[in-house]
Image (cartoon, rainbow, N blue to C red):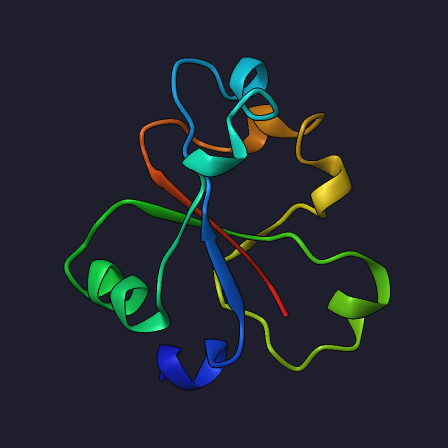
Length: 97
């Protein structure tokens, strides 16, 4: 089911450490990895602590039929100012369509 829901999405891993607010914008772009839908689903099925963040803005989100249940919506431009809403100690996955 999850595979059908997120097929065609861009999924990025957003590594966070120490303090999300201090580090979210300081991370080297090269440190951000990509994961496949298959690997993401496997991690979820194995019970990994994963926070999924939908970073789409405005109409991209509003008009999309593709939304992952349980994903936190933080539009990309708001990530830095809302970083404290992102739980520490979990793998962070951002996505957009």
